[in-house]
Length: 183
Image (cartoon, rainbow, N blue to C red):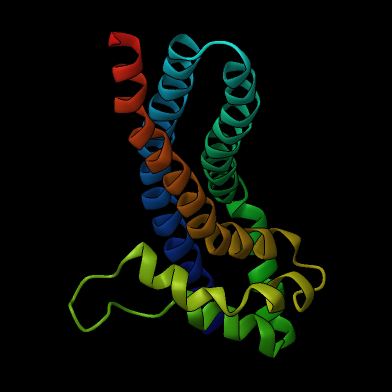
């Protein structure tokens, strides 16, 4: 029984460590994405006129919403891990008590130690867990909170990448819009 308690404790502490690190990262990401995307969108509105302004209003608005929305969804999902810790611990304990192999695989993925460099990284852990997304959503029947935690961790890199790429495009448009305002 103590082996199960130890595994549950290690799993929960690893999940909360990952959630805390990604929450800090996602907060900064959200702030930068919002400033760049909304700022560039507003500069575009000020710099453009006529038909191209209407096109920018639609395209720029949609992409700004996608960028900020991706960062916001990633932050919200990761924050859900912290809010669900007691339920996740209960689910992990019951899965281990039942001897479910799928739960042990998820737990072992979360309990992987630091890499060769001596530092564990959210990106390394996230990459190693990415392959478990399908198993987490379909193979952990009755473990909704654990499945949501795994999904939140594995979907964050894609959401962050989408927000960053769109923000880079918006950032590249800022000098063009400033030049258009000056001329």
